[in-house]
Length: 116
Image (cartoon, rainbow, N blue to C red; front, top):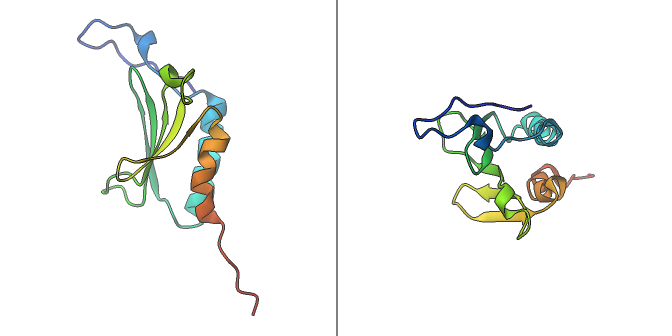
């Protein structure tokens, strides 16, 4: 899924917008669906900016995001272009592979089951 934003007042072209590719969105939406089914998440928002694409997840729409999944192509050669940022602004995980980075959020789905 590519999103083309209207040109800004600064005269920048629409090709300067960072977006998620449809394969990346498929992975993110897959995790989002599992977290909604588990009752952890209820809403999301997507932002495409000039240097970053952000997928924000919310427990309720009126709150600030619980987590932000960010794609920063400029970080590709350094620490990796994907990162998960917590509600307090801390980077929980950063890396080159989106699925590996998102594992930090999937831990919430793993719960101990009482066998008694």
